[in-house]
Length: 195
Image (cartoon, rainbow, N blue to C red):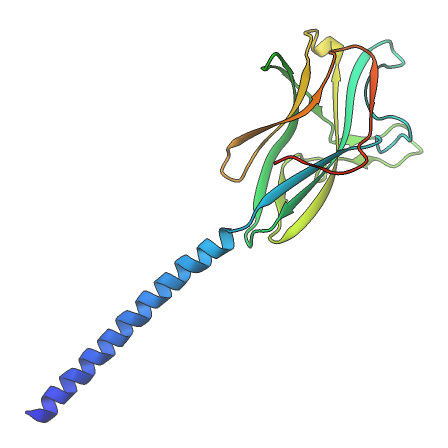
């Protein structure tokens, strides 16, 4: 009888060991998942010169065809310190008046001024949604435009609007303005953190 009892004790110890191993594996998966999601997504922006022009900055101006335009050339850098990829969707500029949305600016995907110049691609190959690899930083050249004919309403502010990985809408202040009055806004010397 001593030998049978010893065998049952060994089977019981093996089962307990297996349960402990399974429990530790499950806990380890949860801890790894939690650690992989830790970190931040930080976005920086910088007003720059338009890529195909050495002197065109963010400005409201009258184009050759007597059409008033608002143009915003912008660089963004997205830093992902997480160990998982991050999606930033529909990175946009929107016009506001007294806190109310007026109009979304057009995201320019490609531009070619003449047959002699190469085509310029903005965003991520023309897309304004970005997949940022884990533990990386990416820079994107963006260009936004709006014709006054497409938005006769006055506005007093431009905001940056995008959606994060959880599809949550994020709105950040970008620039206060005096509507369609002709003006150059210049470039930024340093990167400005959004969030």
